[in-house]
Amino acid sequence: MRILRWLAGIILALAVAAGLGWLWKGDEIRRLMVVNTLFEPEHITQNFSNMDAAFLHVDLPAGPGPASPLPKGASITLPDSTRAMMEARQVTSFLVLKDGVIRYEDYLRGTGPEDRRISWSIAKSYLSALFGVVLAEGHIDSLDDPVRKYDPRLAGTAYDAATVRDVLNMTSGVRFNEDYFDYHSDINRMGRVLALGREMDAFTLDLTETDRAPGQQWQYVSIDTHVVGMVIRGATGRSASELMAEKILAPLGLEQGGTYLTDGAGVAFVLGGLNFSTRDYARFGQMMLQDGRAGEVQVVPAEWIEQSLQPDAPTQPGQIGYGNQWWFPVDAQPGEAFGHGIYGQYLYLDRERDVLIVSTATDRNFREPGTKTAWVAEFRKIARALAP
Image 1: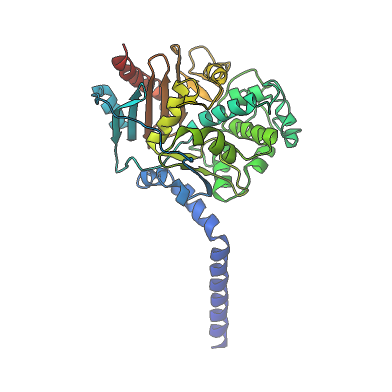
Image 2: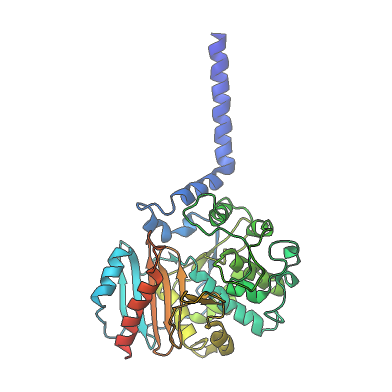
């Protein structure tokens, strides 16, 4: 009987300890569980519309004024090939603007216009716009400055020799495994840092290895964008979320505002953490089409719009172009660029035709070769039908 009582006492103590552990670490455990099921087919659509319920975040207010108008015009019929792509690629929303007027809008797979969808790497293109403002305000002296000038902690890391231009164009040369389907890859280790409320800066400063000298070759390395954020914070002494809300979002006249995922130190997840409605993504894209203007406000300097929407990175011949946190088709036409996020998020600009297309999705096959090119072909069909 004594042994039974002793065993019962041990079990009770373990249960109490487990309960206290859950209370103490419950949020971390819950976030880690969400990360581990984030992309599962039965959860992905719901998760992508409710990232603020799973991750630390800050609110991004809609701004002081009324929502800027997005008038509706005569609805167009999408090409059959586009509709087939939308079905095959698990599209959740699709919005087409011509001359600032909505010509097509649809929500699929149980989503709606109020859903605030995760941007993933479209957030990089937003950060590029913010960088242009910070540059114009004189906080950054030159794109050829070393990044350690603005955050001295980067000295002695893999970014010791990288310039601001290098991280904008993803030519830092830093060794970083971006395989989303490898549990042990750098990008997934980074995801667990975010989920557990750890610090992205610390993760970045722990990177010490490079594959090549900076500036030589383009390689898509998402952590480069975090370093762009570190440069902005170091140059201004302000957080990226505060600057984004004030400099970029407030003048756009958003309907709902949004959220920015953050790490445990409150640092914005600038490489992929924005959440907005499809229409509010369109308001940002329309500002880009209008040479940085929103209504009567010059949000982003026109000079930076022109400079940033150029495929400046040294990509390989026949490879999709890149530059300043934007993508460019292999055979990019004048004024053509797009933001892109994993699982099928697109913000397509045709500045010559004044056409903007926003598409969100939960496409688990987004990495299939030729997917970006296939989507660009569909976007072009729509743009050229609207403005031959």
